[in-house]
Amino acid sequence: FNDILLARVYGHDSVLELAKYSDAPVINALSDLHHPLQTLADLMTLQQSFGKDQLKGKTLAWVGDGNNVLHDLMLGCALLGMNVNIATPTGYEPNATILAKTKELAAANGGIITSTTVAKEAVQGAHVVVTDTWVSMGQEDEYKKRVADFDGYQVNAELMSHADSTVKFLHCLPRHPEEVADEVFYSDQSLVFDEAENRMWTVMSVIAAQLGKI
Image 1 (tube, rainbow, N blue to C red):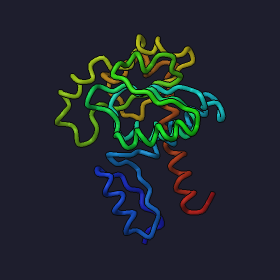
Image 2: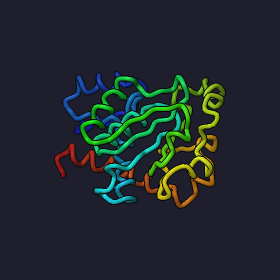
Image 3: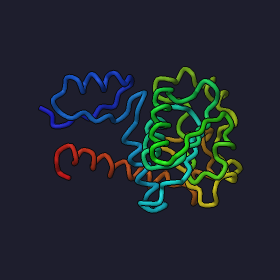
Image 4: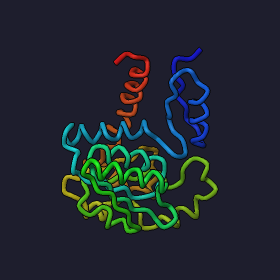
């Protein structure tokens, strides 16, 4: 009775199980391993800001948790020939298999992927700085530990001063002040509200494509 299933779940296995048994297309709206629709909105926002064909060779710095948002964002950046600098605390690195795939894609498209535990190293010369929540769904009991582990990872004006003069900031929202300071979040460098609007357009486009409308 469905033309499309849009699934927002906890475990990624739930998406795979739906796809296995569904005759209709299954769109991953979010799982613990991937968040592809967010990446579409992020890359659309960057194309609007820098120019549609101007992302190749640009450097994106990720500062924070090596989570589902990072997984698909670094894959998407690698496909476009962007460089990705990843800064995470020890123990919060991205999935090793997805990171290896990202490096393969980057090598094929002229990009470079680096990893560090020092936020300033990742941000140095970056054209885009991105962060996300430090406490994802289902991790609420870990809040105090995570906030302590991410000490020094707040995106603020001092950190952004190490980036390129044209740097832009992204956050998929909702944001918490420990992740990004108001001085960045509400600045001209921030694209977060365009990014949020583009979530609507990109999801609509994916649905329309699966229905054969475009």
